[in-house]
Length: 190
Image 1 (spheres, rainbow, N blue to C red):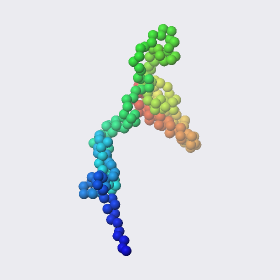
Image 2 (image 1 turned 90 degrees about the horizontal axis):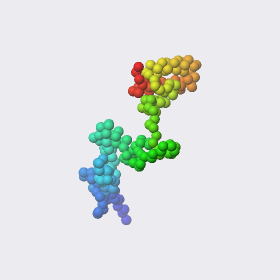
Image 3 (image 1 turned 180 degrees about the vertical axis):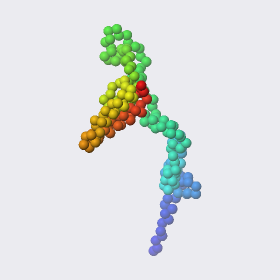
Image 4 (image 1 turned 45 degrees about the vertical axis):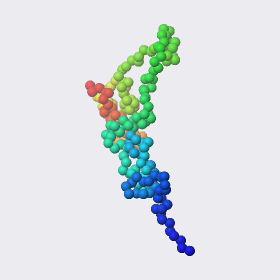
């Protein structure tokens, strides 16, 4: 009794009514799907395992987009492509309450006077943190930032503190804060 070896291609050959690999010249079963294009993600091409791997290595979702378009795409994806508003920025179109006694102000329902603007509202959180590290308050000028930086560097330099690890960490914080404020467009030059 002789045993015949099974043909490995016969096992993966497509059966009737099955998809065939779309790679040119391939007649294997196309059981793995690959997206057709970035704007047609629900339409697929069908490949065998070997050819779907090749296709995936070459396929670039962002092909043809410049850096700005890619950045916009990523930002839109972070909110699941839903519109967003700043916190408290979208109010219902309901009627405004007339509250002469100011009773509704505690609940946030009455009209409130707008907050006084001193210019610090344009600062980024990183700039606010940097001001805290350098122990500065708003408003400030570049000269004030530079002067305060020099004072703190002399005080916290590791060489002036016997190479203490805590002084080195503080020194790094001061340098980072100074770099942030030096690059800021919100700080006055005078």
